[in-house]
Amino acid sequence: MDSLILRGGNPLEGEIPISGSKNATLPLLAAALLAPGFYRFSNVPKLKDVRTMSNLLRILGAKVDEVDHELLIDTSHATHVEAPYELVKTMRASFYVLGALLGRHGEARVSLPGGCAWGPRPVDLHLKGLEALGAKLDLDAGYVVASALPLRGATFEFGISSVGASCNVLMAAVRAEGTTVLKNIALEPEVTQLANFLNRMGAKISGIGTRDLTIQGVAHLQPADAAMIPDRIETGSYICAVGMTTGKVRLTNTDPHELPSVIDKARQAGLTIETGADWISVERRGGALSAFDITTDTYPGFPTDLQAPFMALATLAEGQSRITATIYTDRFTHVAELARLGAQIHMDGNSAVVTGVPKLTGAPVMSTDLRASVCLVLAGLVAQR
Ligand code: EPZ
Image 1 (cartoon, rainbow, N blue to C red):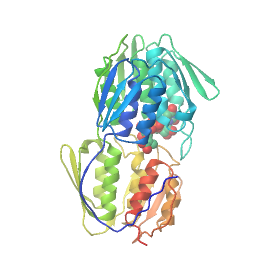
Image 2: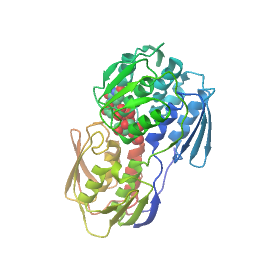
Image 3: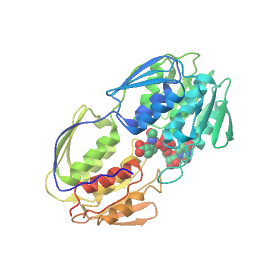
């Protein structure tokens, strides 16, 4: 069990280059299974989840070498089709290989991912979409056993906007015979990057950036290189950090256009934010933070992954902030931990009502998922003894 010890109270000053996006890297690693050959991915973040996905590709027969912030991938011999439970249970995005394995081999045996730190996370949309493309799916001892020889184009509408299901089904659709229309595709930038990458591999996807994609299936795809888009959630987390500690920080190698709702909310809270093509300057000098309301939504709405970091900010904002979760209505494991630091929060259904306090006080706390961990680190940056 790793732990961090933080001594709060210092303003943040300086410049931070933002990493490549974790949630853009993971689907692209799965997509590299679709065509045998050599891929070079750059601006890749050095993260456990990326190493986990790289290990999964190795289990499936690929070679993956990490050189600084690049991944050199060779899927020429990625002929295995089983993604084991021991690995998939540690990282849900491993489930994305299902669509790619079906697209390349016409068969797959992938463990169901199970739940996560804050509750159940179903994959029914992934499975319904693949079945719409003609996949035959069975459940065997916790594994999805899939076959599709061949995949056939179809029209499928996602009942709700799902990043993962959009990625998984799209990676199968590009190899399905005929025309596929996918309706209500997720608009998150990570899905858009995947669609553009698949087209660079020779797929024929149109409508990218809209809710409806039309895909002409192709018989062959070829490898392509990619540079990961900036991590918008990391960007938003650093914006919160400056809001909590005061100071001035310039975030570079990022894209302010990826997080319009986040910048608006930070300005509402009282932060001074200037932006350029690939940079964001965040400043807070003295002065009280102002309370704000958030309702999480699918892109371009306020991202669920920044709900917890912004709740940390709200704990110090004058007045009452209301933070409502609509994507995951139970993603509040950080509330009880923030209360241990002196935060005043009460739950009202799927809303957290946060009453600002003058200060937080240091204490041992337990983190659960990645974003709840960020929330508690942010609180630790300002908590006093
Ligand atoms: C992606 O998860 C992200 N993960 C999550 O980030 C992010 O919170 C989430 O999208 C929402 O933006 C990666 O990109 C690797 P969804 P994903 O399918 O794809 C429901 C992080 O911290 N749903 O868009 O699993 C689901 O329960 C992680 O980086 C179904 O009902 O999320 C949720 O309510 C955490 N059936 C909603 O859709 C399905 O088959 C959106 O989930 C699939 C999803």
